Image 1 (spheres, rainbow, N blue to C red):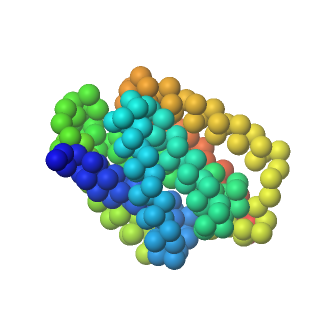
Image 2: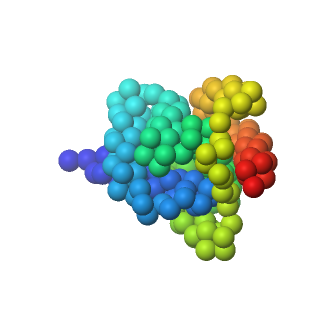
Image 3: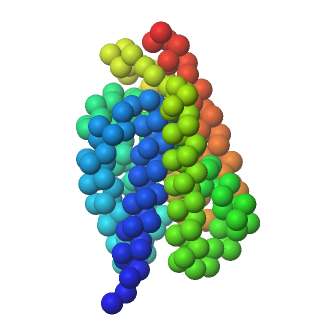
Length: 207
């Protein structure tokens, strides 16, 4: 019996929970209120991700599905407006990707230097540890973005943002296919700064 599926599910769940925690903390939502629903969705997503990566050879599709699933989760379960759920998911994923890229560079130099399953598990675990430690500190300090949710409505700029996000998702797919980690880091950083700037402006408008 191979333990690879068990290891994949365990460490992927820790990693994806860290992403959930990052997003909820960054936008100052009560992450504990939805933890069991989030865990259920994460487990299903990771099982699907395992099939895509190992059975169908479609690993570059898995992150895109995760983004879409999180958007729907935050909209349907956490009850974020669609605009905010999109902003929260994409910007949170971008911040998460930047953190993971920095860890890759510090410990491995390049993603191509990760040559074993255990090194992949180490990367996932380290990313989760850094995210939980950093964002629990920021949350306790009252850092993050808050909104008057009733004022978030679709406007022309929101439509343009949605178009940009679609382009971003397509771009991420291409980048993941070519596996260029430095280019990934730059794109994720630019998108993260843009979305967080947009979020800050939204927050001021709602004040």
